[in-house]
Amino acid sequence: MKPINHLVGLLVAAASCSAVAVPLLSEGFDDIRALPANGWVLINNSAPPGSTSWFQGNPGFFPAAAGPADSYIAANFNNAAFGGAVSNWLLTPEVNLYNGESLNFSLRLLGEGALDRVEVYFSTSGASTDVSNSFSLLTAFEADLDTGWRQRAVLVDGLTGPASGRFGFRYVVDDTSLNGNYIGLDSVSINAIPEPSTVALMCLGAMALRFRQRWCRRWLFAGGMASLTLAAHAASPDQDGVMRFPHVQVIAQPATQPAPSGGGFMAYKDPVTGKLTSPNPEQAALLTSALRVAAPLAKQAPPQVARAQHGGVRLMLDERHDRFAVARKAADGSVTQSCEPAPGEQK
Image (cartoon, rainbow, N blue to C red):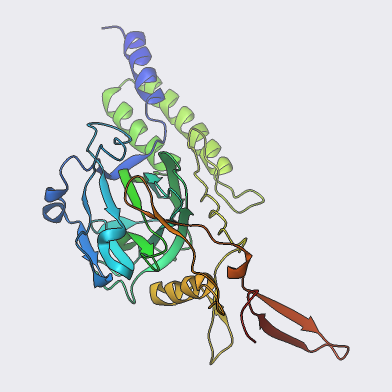
């Protein structure tokens, strides 16, 4: 075969060596009974425990995002007993983690008037399953209506070096007599993005072994240096600090859905140091619960309770259940805060 034919074929091969996402893990939940054998960990810390944990998706509620109708993993308000608190964890297998990798998944919250919430966590503690101390909250999604299947992506960032750990999904309901219905999780993958320079060197090395003619080696060397120069130039951070590469899609972490009460991000203030930090799972649960505690009513009729079509609990609440805090700044610059009771509540 003529050298020019070799060259054309290898140009096609080189074009296919663009930096693309390489899946480190891919799970479609065709049979969740196989998850523990594949390194997944299911932990139901709900209190008191209910009649269910994670279970195979039920097409009667909705079909899977991809594949057979029941090929997703699901959880519902029965993870805890009626009136209890759901804290149901699903941990991925241990994986090697680097900045720039992304966790991708499909999520659906059924809601139907009862609030469903799924939190996403991250751990760099190897195979640890200590959800109380090893995992940090990344983002959360919640809704009290049917969201439909939505594609979600969370970017790994802030690591000081390569790490080994897990991602975690947590289904959260603070009071199953008021909230919680049914949620589904599908098509979970962890994707690594190789550096363009690494991919270019691998491709060029393979081509150099194939071509022994001096003129080909010279052409490959010149092309390789140009590619590496382009990759080095493109790999410089832009104004928002995100590295940009040719042929690579950088996935940004989506903004957390705002809470129904109009809140923003969640932070925990250490009572000793006074510093704001990201809350651990227990602190996040306490903060979330405190935001949603209904104010006691003074000689008022209780809200009407109705069962939703798929087993959730639906309540009609009025302004009597509102609770808010007011900060007041005095003339001397000092700030005081007081909690205002709900209408009908005694001070």
